[in-house]
Length: 395
Image (cartoon, rainbow, N blue to C red):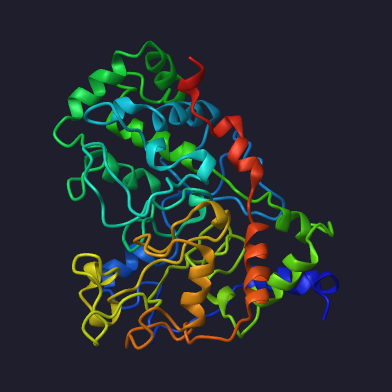
């Protein structure tokens, strides 16, 4: 059947997504975790504001409004402050890196590395996840089920020790002093946090401002979005690739579903947050499903053997810009990613592997069709939006 005549069907699939079991390499809404972890990761959202009336989101057509914590409502002043902080290298121990060092706008807020590297040149074990549409992420990072909000997440790169990212642990006052020494911040912090007249510059307001800025990194203006809006803009090859993507044969859409092409999602109006982790058969070091020590995904939090190798499925928006792929950057190209899934995983006999990674037949021409469709998910406006750019380069 011709995809243009069935645009509504594709939209329905995107909106509903796909239900997955909690067995066979799948972990949904805290599966495999104790009750306290489930409460943090997968129950109904609490402590969030339903709206920020004075803030204009400027969302793409069909996108829901993101959740916002009740104690950190959005404002233009806060977002602008957060943009300056996001790109400020003074937030690192040796003033060499900022948040933007690992999340570059031109790469859809990734860094192009297989694995990240911190300010002290410590090489990490995982790649830097893209930040596009992070406002809709129900859990943050590759495999942390208890990190649902951006405010708390911002503390990890600032003060984390394993691995060291910005390296400011134990230097909190030094960081505050650096911010006080910048005349622009002396102006911007009180404007962003008028409710904090005595101490507007603090670690709390710092992380809240960065989180507010990150919630505005919204991507939903690709050629594919134009197609869903009724514009017959996709090529014949892209349409064929779309059929492959949404087919039961390839199974792509089961884990990369919904408007954000991810099955870990939250937004205003959604009755509960969806949280999911998957084992894609990337490793099997001992014939019993072992992954490299210390990089075992959800298992590192739950201690459950069935969670070894389970990681979050990232959004596929802008995926042609975010190579290399997988949690450890171990697959270099989209062609190789497709080969991985077509083979049923690089370690196809992994006993913990997802039930959706079973392998499939695909011709070379179909592979190129699928890659062409994935290219249609690139949002060029995201890469050039001055509201998301480094404000310090113009000074």
